[in-house]
Amino acid sequence: MDVIIENLPAYVDGFLRTLFLSVVSGIFALIFGTLLAAARVSPIAALRGFSMTYVEIVRNTPLTIAFFFAAVVLPRLGVTFQQFEVAAIIALSAYTSAFIAEAVRSGVNSVPVGQAEAARSIGMKFSQVLSLIILPQALRTVIPPMINILIALVKNSSVAGAFYVLELFGTGRQLANANGDAVLWVLVGVAFFYLLITVPLGYFANLVERKVAIAR
Amino acid sequence: MSSVLYDVPGPKARRVSLIGSIVGVVAIAGLLWWAISILAQQGIFEPERWAVFQIPDVWVLIGNGILATLTAAAVAAVIAFPLGLVLCLMRISDVAWIRIPTRIVLEFLRGMPVVLMMFFVLLVFATGSFVAVVAGLVLYNSAIFAEIIRAGIQSLPKGQREAGLAIGLTSFASRRSIELPQAIRRMLPSLVAQLVVLLKDTSLGYIVSYEELLRKVQIMADFLGPDYLFPVFFVAAAIYIAINFSVSRLAIWIEKRGSKKAAGGVVHVPVAGIPAK
Image (cartoon, rainbow over all chains, first blue to last red; front, side, top):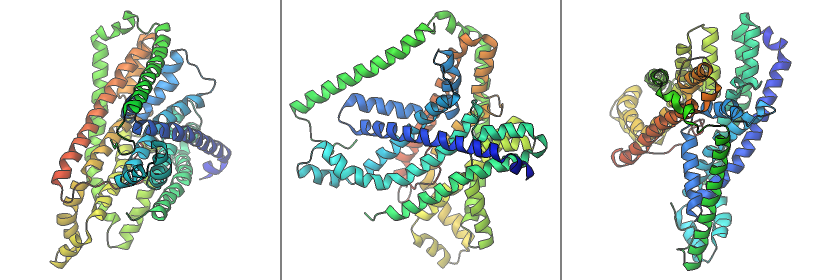
């Protein structure tokens, strides 16, 4: 127990870095994922094909492979980073955006066809149908799975700890090496800080799900 | 693909979308060309870089890596599924002192990174890396399996359980012979999709020094020299994607087939923590 209190500054440091990685990659993934989803439903075949291929490949790639590529293979190819955080953010946002894209797309598909038909029949354009009718309704279905994706993102950021970033897991590894006699408590401390993010977010997802659920 | 969002294209719209397609293809091709030219500058396409694949030992190492990956995934899946079933039954038990602690444990397991669990088992129980990888995967995935099966049971009409109890089955007997068979069938696509996640997560074994495919890549690159890192990595990544892709296809196939066979069809119930891993 003492080992947690003694190393509290290190824990907080790691915790903040985990938060930083998650928030920055989360924002990038949300933007890129939404663009991918828009490309997926667009009338232009080339964009649809690109989005589909990207999502299909990334979803079947283990995250560790993505990290290995960004942090080990890319520098070998001459793309070097000042800080390994950049590599971590690239890997995390590229990976997460594929799942965001899928969530948004299935949200769009969950809006009954009649809604789009009705909008079309009163003469709305594609952009109007999407922005006034489909997306506002789709957003309600999309938010709970989106929060779950972000929870997974927080947990996934732990892989960065194995690729030279001193976030929560990386800090835990270091502390475990330094305090060989108190490994159990060191890791319990790490777990506590992860749960501090993931459990409230999970409850939030449930709450939102109940609040925005609409009977169709 | 829903096509109601936009009109059936007329000549003008067809022209616009053709131009858009061409511009899109050119842009994507340009990006690819740029990436390839960077790779070419690094001499990636020189034949001797790829000559490593003529060495039989390289293939032996890759084969061993695949085997290690698949073994860990198979062992973990075989243990995690029954455990998930038990956890699910405990989670929905009528007895509060079984239900509530199980709920806390499940919440705990689902909220933690899998790597952390592997690392925990590795250091605290001082096991080998294989046991650590399997234990980490089992702990996490049994919790997810439990939640998926629970979602399946809850998606059943209430009358199923009521009918079971009305004909004098005990609570457990009704779960076992009426609800579970239907729930598992309904949730089969989600369960198989979770197998893909499990398979992907075996690559976390790299971090706890389990000699799976990615770790073998690292070992080969260290041994052969950094020049060969890219070719070996490329092949390993392609193998990983191919394996996961086939299992994903299996999930989709089961979903299509199952929607005909399962009573009431297969269902999609979102379960926290499932989508993005």
